[in-house]
Structure formats: C-alpha cells, structure tokens
Image (tube, rainbow, N blue to C red; front, side, top):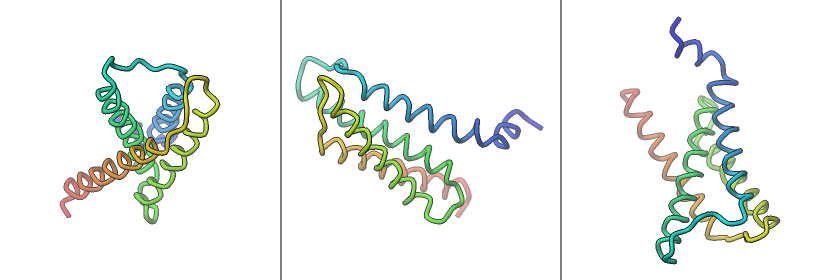
Length: 129
C-alpha cells in the first residue's frame, strides 16, 4: 500500500484536517484588526475582492472533496461555504477596526461558485465523461 492509498483511507487526515485548518485560517485573518493593504485604494479593493474569492473558493472545494458522492455535493458545498462566509462577516463585526460588508459576501459567493464550477469540470474531464 502506498502512502497516498493509506492517506485516502484516513478521512480525518485526508478530508477533515485540511477543511478545518482552512476554516481556522479564515477565522484568524478575520480576527486581525488591520490587514496590510497597498497604498492605492483601487488596488487594495481589487486585492481584497480577489482575496475573498480565492479564500472562499478554496473552502468550497474542500467542502466538495469532503462531501464526495453525496446527493448534490456541489450545492451543499456552496451552501456550507456561504454559511461560513455569513459567520465570518458576523465575526468581523466584533473585531475592532473591521466591519461587515455585504459586498464581501458577493465576492465569497462568486469565488465559491467559480471554484466549484472548475472543480466539477476537472472531475468530469479526468473521469472521461
């Protein structure tokens, strides 16, 4: 048995730990009162939007990996990602120097949808369907 085969037989290590670690990273970043930003406002906005899309896109794919063969795994992964995004915005409302922003949820959802679409496309392509 190869190390990869053994790892795939350990769902706690292979599926849950990456998901929980990524959620912990998002929580940690949300708890920072002041994240570094570029000097120009428009560049900071672009990086912020892209950051939200990337971080929550990865979270959505990690959920999709975990949900695997369940019914409607991509929809469920999207909904769980958005639930975490909502909780993230709520969490930020308690952090000094941070605030909630409904546009963040839009970028979180866009990143999650794009990532899940790419995930589904790659999976279909690799399975030969």
